[in-house]
Amino acid sequence: MILTQRTKILVTAVAAALLAALAVATVVTARHDARADAARSPAAPAGAAAAHLDVGPPGGRLRVLSNGLLSTVPLDDPHGPRTVTTRRCERSYTAGGTTACLTPATALTGPRLLVLSDDQRVRRTVPLTGLPNRTRVSADGRMVAWTLFVGGDSYAGGGFSTRTGILDTRTGRLVSSLEEFTVFRQGRRHQAADINVWGVTFADDNRFYATVSSAGTRSLAVGDLTARTLRTLADNVECPSLSPDRTRVAFKQAIDADPAKGWRLTVLDLATLRRTPLAETRSVDDQAAWLDDDSLAYALQRDDGTDDIWTVPADGTGTPRVLVPGADSPAVLPKA
Image (cartoon, rainbow, N blue to C red; front, side, top):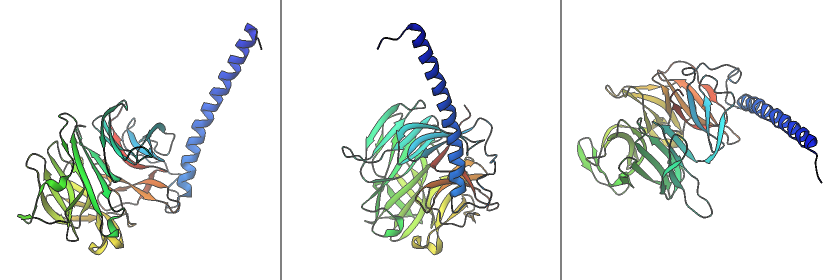
């Protein structure tokens, strides 16, 4: 069929109008769906979904995973529309312009670590083995850490093992397993076949904190990449997360030191080793992220398997609130 020039112009104009309407509808639907998701959350306190959360500075952003897709939401409107990419990750974390993405296994490849630049380009790919579980990036974006389960899928299941590695993105140096490091417990070298290490959080480009497990005891340890050592500091500490001011560690503490009973989100003062249980009393099986020096974000799963990101004050006061419905793996991004 041959169209006249006038007909072509008319068709183009109509198509453009339809596309514009569709775009508006999509944004409105995204906002509506996000708020509806929060309202359906069985664990949400009354009014939590409708409340406007004044979290973070205007213009600040939060990097999250939405149904496994790398996404961004504004911190001053975390229930609103979000920017969703096509990048699929099992776990992710962003800091210093670097994003660590642990990809799911496919029919052709196992899981991989993708190191992404600020514009989402792949800078480095590391093939991995196991079930992706945790990842972190140092504040300057240089160091990347990850943990995978090998031969198990639950801390509480017994008989699990982990594989935790660290990559220096500047030099390319790769530590494939922190179990190769020398472990010191109460000042004495500890050697055992059942040592597992997981949940790294960086203090700087050399020092880090992690969980070291042996003989059923899970301990917070400070690691030294240069010395290749791990020195335990306190027991019953899992999945540490260092505060921005580097004075405290948020972590999940097994109830009665028994992971089968669940975990209590807690903050440890590194100077005094004093513990502060937080107002979140449900079991949190996540490596919490600090939104700022005063508040934390973490994922909790609904009955239908969907995750929501919640927030709670870091001093033991307040009430947990839904921060981002239908998401996990929170990481604060600098103001654009």
